Length: 593
Image (tube, rainbow, N blue to C red):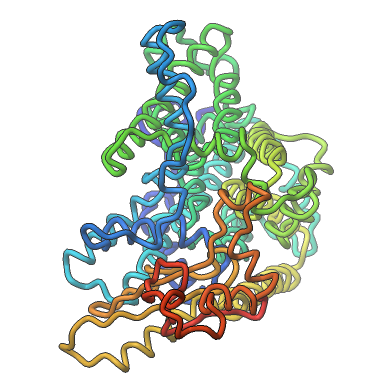
């Protein structure tokens, strides 16, 4: 029997043929409105990287005055010092090998962040500056709303689409066999004896899991590179969903494509792995998801080993490389020199293991703490789906393979964070949503509504606390400074300079992106916590020195001469970059210090 989800069309993303699937843009619009409202309840800071790896470098690139340095540009966007011992050794190696070696060395010691990760914010800042609408609110909050529309909402839409395609595939397979599914049999024995049409298909339960997920609402709308990695990956899954989520019944051996010359390679798959190449330049760890996905697709779609290898090389690897090459060209334009940030990132985090300088966790942390916190109330359902299912369909198996490979690969890194698992959260929502529907089918309508309401209320309560109360100070402090300086600056007056010293932990607050208020200018100083001092035991980081003894640190910074401030040899010009710090207009501290 022909499947209602047309899986054999290879030149377009197949849409399920049910009447509600012909307006996918309406669903995207609804998700975009939901995420915009979501942003209104995010007034706090989760992790400094949402600013220092996105807003700050984008701000420096667009708003920095010609010939000046930008204080928000960290070491991650600059070349690091290195010594090339073989630069002048021309006797033993040919010039080609020397050129390749030098390019690799320059790449490894170059910037560790790619401009591909901040393109949306860059374009947004350029537009608001050109249009003259670069207000304080627009510069600080505008990118978050943009992220909600371009990143969070498409991710929700992808969950809707994938769950709908999975629904259509499983429904068609059950219909073709004319055998009632186990869910149908349970529904006949359920207390209300309702039919399948009396309960929404599990697409609604998958979307419910995505929209009520506390971590989705708390982290996805933020300007993390992890958020961009998530949307690129999940859209890639959408592109290959006919093959990846096809059940064993809908995709038989006779339906597999056998094309040793790869002339019929799906343009959808090519685009999916092109996005994968872009994704790998943003965070090379996303290869832990794309590699198993490519292996699964080659195994499902082709029968001979030659055709499988051809698919892996000519579709996965080739188009992945083309996507990666596009970001290298972008970085060449933006940096002004050839840079391969993925090499710098790999060298810094893997070869040098410097990621551990910013915190370490045991190997099992993602399994014992990361996933439980990330999934929240979905955890019991996922545990049941993983360990208590007697037989998996191929779609469920494929998703779990990708999730397992991704989590296991990330467990090998000493430095772990909750947000690093963000790309697999949409897959968790789909897996949990399908099982949640089965649970709902066994309950009375009142019980089902109570269960869903309690889950939503608990997740919303967490979001409200974390978004409106927890760690709000680092964001609010710059707003208070802007209010104070604005009240002192009259309209039409000359630009006034204010000095701000942040005597806090490592990058505790956003910086210039949250201090934009022309014509007022700000000169800032924050404590050094770069890998240069962290990796060298002989060097004491300023942030550590201040935390250990704030009084002594301030005496050495502001009063290096002690009480002998009138001594001409001791009293130097209060140069902001000199050994004695100029007295600031504002000092920012927190209770942790």
